Image (cartoon, rainbow over the protein chains, first blue to last red):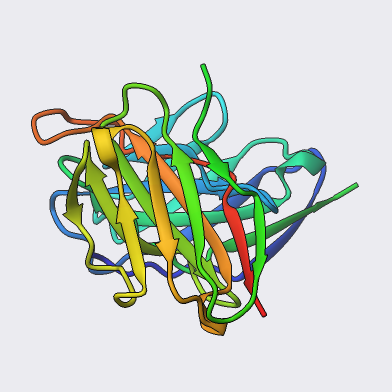
Amino acid sequence: LAKTTQPISMDSYEGQEVNITCSHNNIATNDYITWYQQFPSQGPRFIIQGYKTKVTNEVASLFIPADRKSSTLSLPRVSLSDTAVYYCLVGGRTGFQKLVFGTGTRLLVSP
Amino acid sequence: EAGVTQFPSHSVIEKGQTVTLRCDPISGHDNLYWYRRVMGKEIKFLLHFVKESKQDESGMPNNRFLAERTGGTYSTLKVQPAELEDSGVYFCASSQEGLAFVSTGELFFGEGSRLTVL
């Protein structure tokens, strides 16, 4: 499973756009990129998944360049409630998954 | 629809005692996973059930840990005897994907069971 590298922490203010970049230089051809969010005392929660180019849902956007060696999670107009740890994971989409969580990025949103 | 539920939310036991954690997956989810985060470390995979069968238990730390999923519904994770290093948060997750089904890659996690071994 490909290893990921992301910033340990980020700070932002309410209303700003936040972009969290993840490096995954050894991503395999059949690997997908998945982001999870975790609040204190809760389990991780799926945010978004993509393979290439851009994916957007009601929560976030995921930008993946052509070489797929990195990806950027974009959170538009963050609020205080977006303060959480964000995990970037890379792995197969089909069959049985064994998610590999890294250290994650701790996002702190201030008023 | 109910999410993944775990019980107890917090358990405090002494070294050498036994603890059993329970996980009820989302109804209809054949796949059930156990993960844990020990103090200061990353969330690590423990094992994976498909229905009642253990598909992958490569993450189980040692034979003091026993997971079961009788009937393919809820699962239990027993730690016997518990050691200090077993302290942490144990997460359960479930999903719908299977061998022939291309899933969204989404695992649904419970809130976790915090285990404190004194």
